[in-house]
Image (cartoon, rainbow, N blue to C red; front, side, top):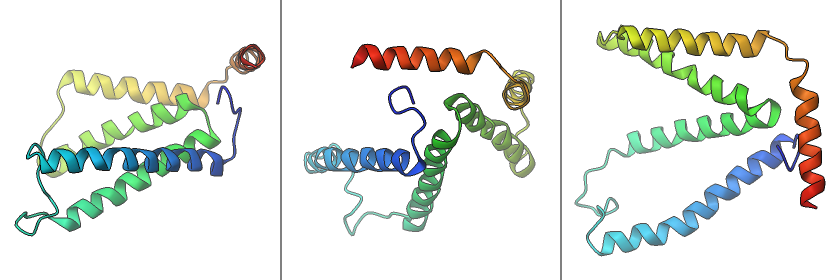
Length: 146
């Protein structure tokens, strides 16, 4: 946001998609090399037992999560998105407690409360001074880098 300001969602999603494509193009040769050297499992061979429904399901959830993060960054602030992502931790703790009987400890409860308070403060507390200062700093940095 420092250099692009507030770009439209398609720009953010395009940048994230391009990063994913570059990571695939640069990472695939490394994975193949490690596999042929015997340092990495050959998950594509017929002798390997892979639960492909789990792999594709996980990939689908990852895609939805990463797209949601990119979309959130395009339409709101990075602080809001990062705190919003942290709200998932207490939700997962609750699911573990209900489904598996794994109840959180006192420090985990305290962390959950701090996450909730931070998110509530971010959503409901107005900060009149933060936005103009951010704009002045970003404009001066953009002018200095040009």
